[in-house]
Length: 474
Image 1: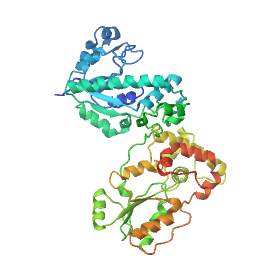
Image 2: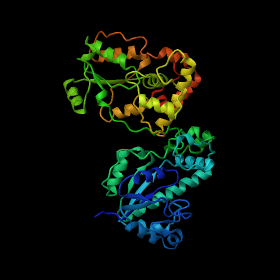
Image 3: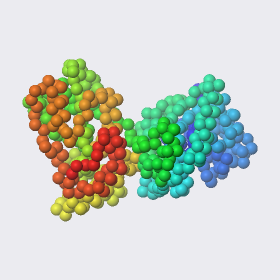
Image 4: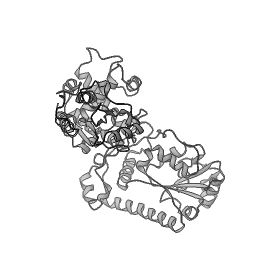
C-alpha cells in the first residue's frame, strides 16, 4: 500500500514547475494536474473541469477536488503557488497522506524570468526557433515585494511541516536537469517506474546570464549589494552533469603520469609526448581503464600525477567544428552533420569541402555553428551535448567525481608546463613539444576577428571566467 494518496508541488511562477510537471507525467502511474487551485482557472487555461469537478464546484468546496485526486487511478497531484486558494493549505499541509514536493529557484532569476515573460507574452517554449527575448527594467521595490512573498510562503511551509513531523522532497531549479533526481522523486512518491531520459519538449526560455537580460543591471547590482548570496553574475549552467570519462584516460608506459583528455584539445600532441617521455611507442600507452583498473594502476604507481590540458575556447570550438561537423571522414558525426544542415540550415557543403569552400564561407559556417552550440549547451536542442563541445569546466567537474587532475595545463604554455610535469615524475630530459599543437590553427587565423571572439565568448563564458582566458591570439 502506498504511503501517499496524492501529492502537491509547492512552487512559484518561473521556477521550472512546467518542466517538473512534464517529467512527473512521464512516469507511468503519476499524474500532475497543473495548477488545480489557481483562482482564475482550474488546472490549465480554458479547462472546464478536472477529474469531473468543475471550477465552480472546486471554488465552493476545494476538498471535493482533493477527494477526486485521491480516488483517481495512479497517484495524482497538482502544482500550488503562494497566491492559489489558501484553503487548500489547511487540508494538504497537515495531511501525512499528501506528499509534499518543494521546488525553489534563485529569486532574482525567477523575478527576471517573470518580467521577461510578461513583456514577451511567452510563458512556455517548445521550439527554440520561436524564442522571444526582451531586456527588462529592474524595480527594487517590486523585487522586494517578490522576495518577501516567496520567503513568507517558504517559512509557512517549513513551520507547518515541522509542527506535523513531516518532511518534503526538495528540488532546486538546477536539479530539474538531473534524471537521477527525477527518479529519486519517483521513488519518494512510491512509484516503481524510472526514466532513462528527461522530457525535453519544454525549452529554457532565457538561458543567458542576468547581465544580458536586465537593462539597468548595474543599478540592480547596487540595489542588491547587501544580498550577495544571489550570485548575480553567475552564468546559468544547463549542461548535463558528466561522468569522470575514465575510459578516455591515458597512462604513460612507465612513468607515473596519467593524461585526462579534454575532447577538442591537443590530444594528439600530448599523447605523442607522453609516449616519447619513456621512449615508448604510442601503442605502449595504457588506455581503456575502468574505475577498478585505474585504482589498481594508482596503487602500483605511488606518487602518480594526473593532468589535463585546456585549450582556448575559440580554438577548441573551431577544432570540434572542423573535426566532427565539417569533416566527412572517419570519426566525424555524420548524423549530427546532416541534422544541422537540414534543421539548423548550417551553411556547409553536403560532402567534403572543396575549393569553392573558402575562408568567407568557413567563417559564416563557424558562426552558425556557434549559434547551434549556444542553444545546445542551454539544453534547447534534441541533439546531445557532446564532450567535444561541452564546456571544459563541466568536463573537469566530471573528472572530480572520481579523480581530480593534479595539474591543469594550458596549451599556450604547453612546453613549459610539461617540462615541470616531467620533472615531477623524476625525468631530467623530456621530448620536444611541437610549436603548433592545433592542426586547424592556420584555417582559424583566416577567419578570426572580434565577431568570432564575441560569438565564442557568449557560448563559453564559464570557461572564460573559470580559467581566465583573454582574447584568442590569432
